[in-house]
Amino acid sequence: MGPCCSVDKGGDDTRAVGGQNASTENETVAADVAALVMSTSDPSSRLEIHVSAEGLRNTDKFSKSDPFCVLYTQEKGQWVEVGRTEVIGNNLSPKFVKSFHMNFFFERLQPMRISLLDADDSAESSRLNLQKQDFLGEAEFMLSQLAASSSCKLTLPLTDTQKKAQGTVTLRVEEASNSNAQATLVLRAEQLDKKDFLGKSDPFVVISRSNEDGSQDKVYRTE
Image 1 (tube, helix red, strand yellow):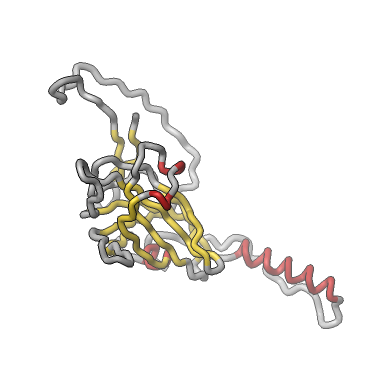
Image 2: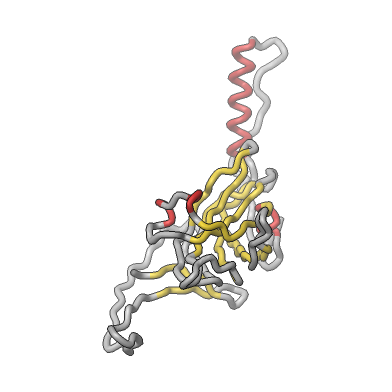
């Protein structure tokens, strides 16, 4: 077990149920109970995964790619979508604000896949048809690789079947907090510098937090 997460063993009252003379019905019930006890007692930890990328391939003619990423996990041999980040416009080295939350089970194999795509319209990523977006590359890893990393970080090369992908994707993990505490901030700015030649500036605010290794993660971006 790596330094990025701790063990939550859950319940420890695991007992055998049934006997040699039990009926078929009792054996079925016993199996269901045993499976339930096992599922609640698996050592696990709740993880938060932050994603960034560098050197992505540019698929747009008159601007840069508008990347977003999709995280998958494998269940019963099928890739199941975990979630999507926001779309970041005109950026080949994006640092995504939205993170992913995953339950990491220490005694299970959890194959993962991260795919990066170029959004072809301005809709939110959750509304995009993935089949109609330009593919930028993907990387596969085991969740245990990420959790056991001494730096709590994993950098992987992006690949695709046509060998057009370029760049890398970096995943940084930390144990998610169980706290429900919230802070409310009211932000205001005045007399900002004018950056546009024919109009006024289009300001927005990005809030980041510092990590123990000195790096920073974006945690919120206003409109």
